[in-house]
Each structure stands twice: as structure tokens, then as C-alpha cells.
Image 1: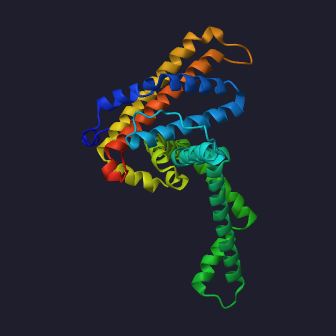
Image 2: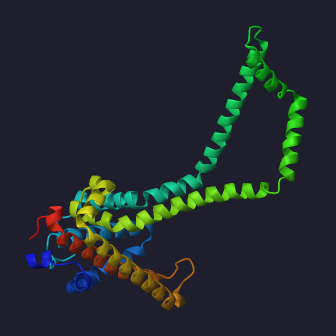
Image 3: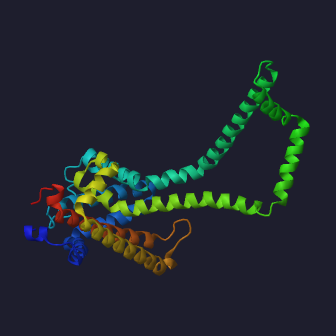
Length: 321
């Protein structure tokens, strides 16, 4: 690709180029899509291998297109298979992308699952009760001290008086009476639950927004650096976004459109193939077809991200052909 193309703006022409890119290598596309679709039918292990192949192709496409090699095939060269380069690296990059994008959402889910927030509330109440107990012990020691300050002795005596069984029962009865006669008690209780729920909802929305926004950049970082450390460091991605400027936001919008189209296509495929669903096996034709189309759309996303990096190669320090 020419330097003129590199300096031109990023726009709809690049989206069209990305959509056409997998179709320029029809044999590789058919082979890759068929292999990915079949592996999705092969149980858990097959899905793991399919994910490795997918991440391998995505990172390969991003790096090749970012360097200006748009005419290269998107399939990596497996003729000299390496456990590290062709298996360990794609798995590591996939794990890194999951951590940096969906890590906050996973942490929030685990926290809710194990009741960390409720546990924190219980711990807070326990700490408050322990503080009250400590103050009661100090009040008793002041009452028993013959040389205690008269003012402190008066305050301590009042506190000790409240510790008597009769005073405790009377206090609890008065508290219960006030709560029952308070028309806003239920509203205040509901407000406390709503406040906690609103905070959880806000945290969930922020985590979801982060995952959606940063996912394309995590893919881009994985593609052109091939470094696990760079992938899991969000500062690397945020700095890259800063240097890319509006180009990344355009690419991000296009990626959302592609993913939306992919989702709609998957629904259509599921509806059309619904009669082929089998007990215990599920909808095998839908799984295969949807997997093949997912393979294609992911290649389009990879090419689009590679083109966005290529357009900003001078700002990112990428050596292009």
C-alpha cells in the first residue's frame, strides 16, 4: 500500500476494504470457516482449539495489515508448527484480552456471587458493635475508679445505667415503638436497598462500558505487539488511543456496526435452522453456520483494526512496507 493511502483519512472506504479482504482469499476463507465451524461441534476441547485458531488469525491479520501487507493471506503459516508461537501465544493473548476488558465485570460478578458486599456490611456492623463494647468497658472502669474526674464519672454513670437489663429492655421497647410509629421507616429501609442496588448497577454499567469500548483496542494491541504484558496494561492501550485520535473512534464505531450485523445474522440463522434442532445435541447446523460467519466477521474486524493502525503508523512508530 502506498504512502498516499497511509496518509489518507479513515472512513467508509476502509470498511468496504475490510469487508472484501477475507473474500480476496476465498480458499483460505472456506477452509478456515469450515474448520472453525466443525471445531465448535467438537465439545469443550474443540471450542478451545477453535478459539486458539481464531485469535491466531485475528492477531496475524492485524499485524500484517498494520504493516501494509493487505494482500497476504489471513491464515498463519502452520508448515513449521511451534507450540509456543502457534498455541501458547494465542492462548496467552486471548487470556490477556479477557482480563483487561472483562476483568472488572468478572470481579464484580464474583463479588456479588460470594456476597462480598453483604460481608462488608456485616463486617461494618461487627466493628461498630465492638467499638460500642469497648466504650462500655471504659465507662465501667471509670465508675470503679475512686479518683475519676467528676464530669467523666457522670457521663460514665449514665452509660453504665443503660447497661442494666431493665434499661436495655426499656430502650429496645422504646426503639421498637418509634420504628413502628415512624411512617417513613419502610421508605428509609427501601431507600437503603435501592442505594446499594444503584451503586451495584452503576458499577456494572461502567464495567460493561469499559469492556465494550476497550475490546477493539485490546485486540489491536495484541495484534501488533504480540506481547501479553502490553495487552494486560490498559495504559498502553489508552496511550495508543490518544495517539490515534479520531481514527480509533471511527474504527470503534465501525466495529460496533459489524458486531451488530453479526448478531442480527446469528438470530436469522437460528430462526431458519430451528427445525433442525435435536435433543441432547442442540442445533448443529446453526452452530456450524453461525461459527463460520463469526469467523468471517472477526476477520473483517481484524482487518479494520489493522487498517486503523496502518493509517496511524507514523504516530505509533510502526514500520510499514
